[in-house]
Amino acid sequence: MKIGFLGGSFDPVHFGHLVAAQDALERGGLDRVIFVPAAQAPLKPAVVQAAAEHRLAMLRTALDGDGRFGIADHELRRGGVSYTIDTVRHLRAEFPGDELSWIIGADQVPGLHRWREIGSLVELIEFILLARPGHEDGERADIPGLRMRRCEGHRLEISSTEIRERIRRGLPLDYFMPHKTVEYVRENRLYL
Image (cartoon, rainbow, N blue to C red; front, side, top):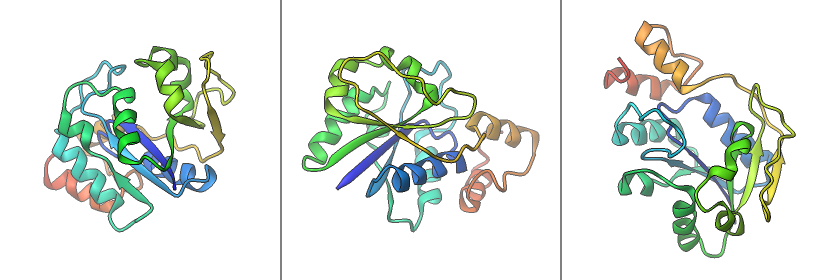
């Protein structure tokens, strides 16, 4: 089975994340995409705003009923800073016979050399590169052994930061997130 993993803080999850996952699945030749919510991303200076249980619950509401997608919550359960190399080692043990890929946006390519143990990471997993608005599609990282497959996809200019700001300002969230996720955010008074 060909499985792609999409990491992020998902604070909150939105249609940009979901469309990226679907594009990687359909256009990247994957059988399944698994979302990997980070406890705390090492290269993002801002601390996540919603608690782990809320971010996990929002992912569950967004993916509800779609068997093409799953969630791996071991980074949340472990806590602390989430390094991709540790997660990939865990996933290799969990999915020993499967072909694994890590899905990234073009905006992450210039910083790949800063990822912990990148030399070991590129030996363990292939990367699927998704285009992101405002970033050159042809950017490449000069990392020996890097296997990167470009995946054409849709470009949605939606960010979790923008959604959190809309919530603070009392603006509608429809068409930014799945309805069940919007309801969850409202019911739990997140990001106010």
